[in-house]
Image 1: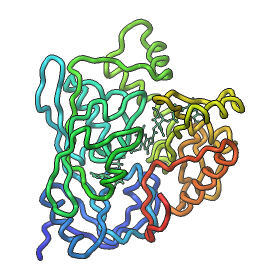
Image 2: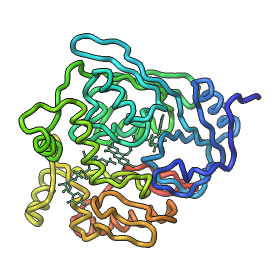
Image 3: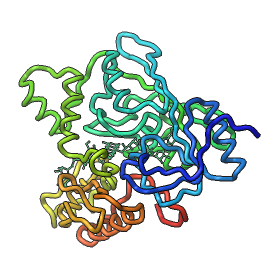
Image 4: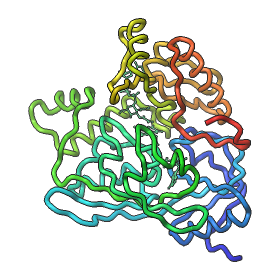
Length: 350
Ligand code: FAD
Ligand code: EPU
């Protein structure tokens, strides 16, 4: 069989994951078109190898060797599909850079993504964990996505309900895990700006900058970028994958117990339950800025694990387990990893 897509073997992914971990893919392909994606999948089927889709590599922890075909999903295109007085429907292909897509939407007078500025990675990965920041999540504007079924090679359609979005969660992390490659996403954005400034730090910064003047979408986007640059390490300078753990959800009775012991605990209501600030828990466990060998927590944000240089995926995993253990010992709360782990033997619990 003839495969039109170029397949590389023993390909280094060190430049392709923001933690900067050394990792070699047995096979690697870059898919610029749906046809190339289909031919890459046919290759993997023939070799009986698993397929790992990769966007910007900003939410993965990679092992030294991946016995798989890693496919860099690089389909490009951004389109305004329709516009009326309330709504601008837009579509972006999976390989578009997320932040560039946000800026493009604002240039097109389509609003609602400004709070999601500067999240690393590509459009195709955004639905996987329903990216969120500063009071907004992808699901708020999401209409549908198209995804290629790894088995059949056919493109299928998912509406919002079938994606089953939750906090850092979707059907693609659960029942349909490892079964699809997302190729395009369609969103309904607002034709007029409806600022969402509920996240304290964002509202405060804009009030300091603008006083009583109403912020434009660009003002909001810039403020979000500035807050993020202040708090989060730039992956081009320090290897990291953003928040390494999710903010854990606890029941009201659990919250009462914690509040009694730790009156200053940081938590937000989440339906009937509470969401704890994992960064606060790690910080209060005395682990902010801690380091063991090449891996540590970031000095300005304890929820972010950083590769100080020379770490492997196993080093990161081992350090993250120590953090989980110490937080559990102190607070009785289990932290769940946010980035996806890919290790050669696949025996490590996720
Ligand atoms: P990758 O890391 O390449 O992939 C992540 C997962 O998605 C993998 O399992 C991969 O197989 C899968 N995947 C990738 N592309 C596809 C596709 N086309 N089809 C199917 N599966 C696919 N996240 C937030 O939600 N909010 C934040 O505020 C935030 N801040 C961050 C800040 C920093 C500094 C960093 C480094 C990360 C941050 N993240 C944040 C995490 C990350 O940016 C998001 O999860 C992003 O959506 C990952 O995109 P990616 O293209 O890099 O995905
Ligand atoms: N905090 C500390 N010490 C720390 C870190 C945080 O006390 O070392 C406290 C802060 O003072 C604050 C609270 O924890 O009161 C929350 O911190 P922050 O506002 O930085 O947000 P976060 O909950 O740590 C979440 C997301 C981020 C997202 C921001 C902004 C998760 C797991 N993380 O972080 O997403 O950008 O809110 O909305 O939900 C990511 O997913 O990779 C990510 C960066």
